[in-house]
Structures are given as structure tokens and as C-alpha cells.
Length: 439
Image (cartoon, rainbow, N blue to C red):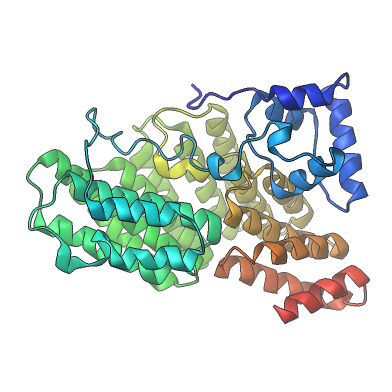
């Protein structure tokens, strides 16, 4: 069943007027061409906007809609502020593990939460981690209580939130302190078993999150160590959900390191751990991880079988049992992961179609993923023989790099730039290459 209800966007519906969804989609595509944008708008997309499923459009659609309706803001078109979208129900109630909410939290935990949510630069926000409860092991209590468990859970949420907005590079070093403190709390023990269970789960998820920051910033050995730590924590605590999460990230890392067979095995182990959890979306993600491994092994048949499983599970919809950390996994991520499979198999035109759809579908609040998907699109287009389109996508990524700091994204863009060098005399390609070199 659907996990999160949507409020219809009646304002946008009124703006459509007497046009059918398909006719209005054609007007959107025409307006996009007028300003040099490329969007894959169809009747289905218009329906998703009007149903409220798309609460805020991505940057390309935003520019198109504001061009179509001059003088209006996104709010005037019925959309929600970007800041409200990322947190909707993805960041669930921190008391969700227990039927009894925690009545109060330590002052340090409140400081931590406010420092992150205040926004500003990722570097400044991340630096506050080292000044709070989870950044100074000298201030830890002799026994952990509910407020300490809550602080660990808050650290996980806020690290993920900042990563979504800014990428991993500015966060990794500062996030190591809270991780050490979380495991120090585990060593100290807790008065209640329920608190200790929360600490195990929180520390394990924090290890995965810090591992991902290392992974995305190119520190693969560090990432492998953190993921292994999370897996060990999961097995000590008997936490199947954490185990599946650790294996999912280990499969992703193995694929990035060129260990395709290991990626397949880790994904399959994650599927075994997730089997009893009741989350089709988690099984879908693990099938995509497996598909990426098979693609790396050049086993097209096994890759396609895994992709079919991924789509089948995804079509079952969201569920209450979906893990909190999977808030990033929607149709855009599915399209992106499938695009990577086809690119690995050498089918770059097919990969570009999926990557373009991923970029169009992505919630704009996930700025790091918008940049990643667009960088993947640029690379696929360059290798598919569409240098002008690749350069256009590359320029969009350069615009996003003002707020996103991700080694992965910069590396993808550098690969695209090298691929486009033979086409540097084309005006759009030359402009992209010059700007990329300057950055």
C-alpha cells in the first residue's frame, strides 16, 4: 500500500485549463525548446504533478514552468517549497522504533539538530558535529540513555540530509567523530535493552552513512571498513534490516571497485537478509545492485533477469516496512541504476534514455542526485555520439557543482570532458570544455 498520501495540486490543474494532459505536455516541451531546456514531459508527468506526487519540480522543469507563466513563483503554481519536500515522511518520527515517544532530549542533541537544520554551507554545518554530544567522547555518560540513542539517530538523519543537498566531500572527515562516539556509547552499555537495541541500530546505520560519505568521496578502503563494521554490528544485534542495508552498500562499492562477482554475491546476501522484512522496494534495490554486478561480468541474460525482478518488486509500491534510509530510492534512482547497467554493457544510447528520465524525475531537493544523474546522462550522450547534448548536460552539472561537492560527480564529468575532446571545435562543446577546464 502507499506509504504517503498526496495532496492534489488544484492550482496547476486550473492552469492547464481546457487542454488535455497530453496537449499540455506538448506545450511544456515546446516551451522547454524556447529556452534551450530538454524535458521528457508526457501526460503521465502532468498527472503526477496534478495528483501532488511531484510536490516540487526539478530545476529543468522549474525553469520551463516559470517561462510558461511569467511573473509567477513555484508557490503560485501550487508547488511546495524545496525545503519542505525532502523531509516529508522520509524522515520518520524518531520514536518509530518504540510506541512511546521520547519526552525530552539532551541539550547537546537539540544543538546538533538545530545546527544541521539551520542550513548554510555544508562545511559549516558539518563542523558543528565535532562540538556536540556525538563529537566529544569526553562528554559521554557512563551509561547511555534515551537522549543518547536519540542523538545517534539524529546524527544519521542529518548526515543523510546534508549529503542529499551537498555531497560527501565536505562531510566525511567531520562525520568520523560522531561515529566513534556512537560506538563508545555501545561499549558503555545502556540501562534498558530497548535503548541498547536502538544504539546498535543507530550506530550501525551511522557506520553505513559514514561509509557512504567515504565511498562517494573516493575513499574506497575507508568505505569498505565502515560497511564491514556496520555488517558486524547487524549480526551481533540480529538486525536483518541493517544487514540488508550493509550488503546493499557493499555490493555498490564492489561494483565501483571493479569486483563484479563480489557485487553479485553481496547483493544476493542482502536479498536473503531482506526476504522477511516485507519491503518490495528494498528487494527491488537489491535486485538492481545484483544487475550491476552481472553487467560488470558481461552476463547480459542474468542482468536482464535481475532488472526484471527489480521492476516487478518496485511495481508493488511503497510499504510501511520500507526502511527510513531508502527515502532516496524512487523511480529516478531505479532509472539511474538501470542506465548504469546498460552503459556497462556498452549500450550507451539506451543508457542515455534511462539517465535522462532519471534526471527529469528526480526530486530537486536531492541536489547531489540531480547532479549525479545529469553527469551520468552527459557521459552516456558523449559515448552515444551526441556531443552537443552531452555538452549541454555537462554545463548543467557545472552549475550544480556550486552547491554539490562530490568526487564521484566531478570524476564522471572529467571522463565526459575527455570523451568530448575530439569534438572541441563544436561551439557548445568548446564552451563546455573551456568552462570545465577553468573549474
